[in-house]
Length: 71
Image 1 (cartoon, rainbow, N blue to C red):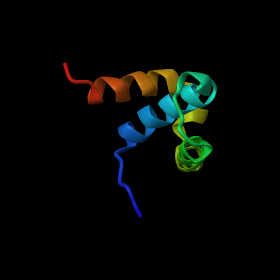
Image 2: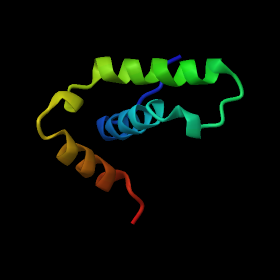
Image 3: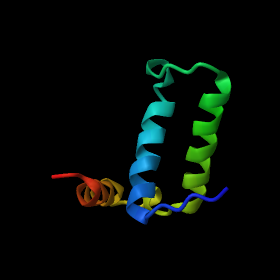
Image 4: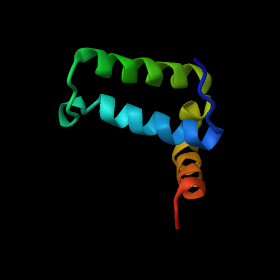
């Protein structure tokens, strides 16, 4: 299965997954497999994105969030 995301969507999703994987106790997983899927998705985004390694990542993230926000 392939899922297509815009670059902005990928950055925002990566940030969300990174944040929640570090604090997974707040998520209500029914099975460990659900957590594993999120970890795998985060890892794939990490392989595909160069932005998280950029010095201006926070700015890039804010721009992506702004573009995707319903205002």
